[in-house]
Image (cartoon, rainbow, N blue to C red; front, side):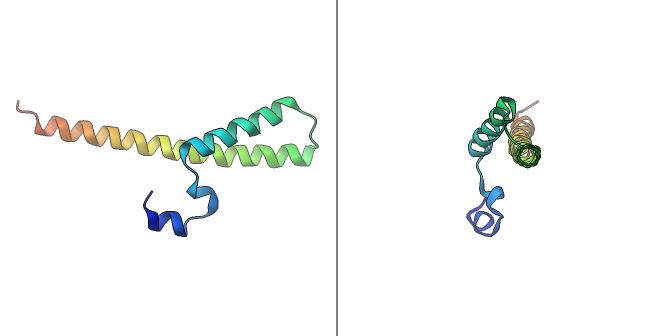
Length: 79
């Protein structure tokens, strides 16, 4: 993510993959532990869904970069 995008993005959009993954793990742990109200559990679930989406976007972006690098390497390799 560029510096400009980081400054204008919503707070969640500025999370690194590692930050989103760590928070997601914490949310899952809290849900698995139980002891929260239904409303809090629903809020945690929704937060977890959002964090999972952020992680997936990072992973998709990484896959796209790997694929692009492979294509570039293949196109520069003599036949």
